[in-house]
Image 1 (cartoon, rainbow, N blue to C red):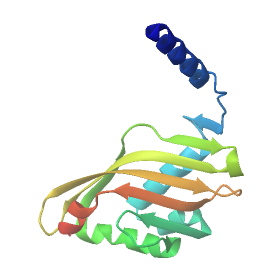
Image 2: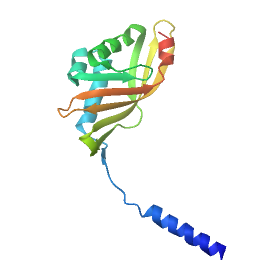
Image 3: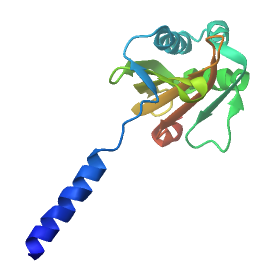
Image 4: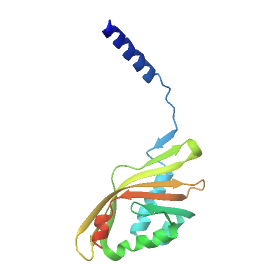
Length: 161
């Protein structure tokens, strides 16, 4: 009798758990114009084309990377990106997996998430450094990036400057 009650209870719990109504909060795209904008930011960085970089971001855009206490404005960020080329030669960034565009219904949020590998050869130590990172770019209603956040372990890059 105990087994019958246990089986019935488990069946009831299972039916309740699986009868929850699923709700969508948006759509994920493997191809979207905003993904192309993010790819353009990478190309502009590698070309040290600050004007193009700035043109892809909103004037009020903020940028943050792991290890930073708080986000900085995009003009400061672009200047700091240029210093990478002071310390490293042969800088390259390659796609690791494909980028996704996420369009959330909630607050009409538009985000590209992408995975990359940054590499370069230290001018000082001659050591090749590779850093895997994930990047999140949110877009405003005008199609400009208004926030970029990057997560990666930059310690190897910093220690070889």
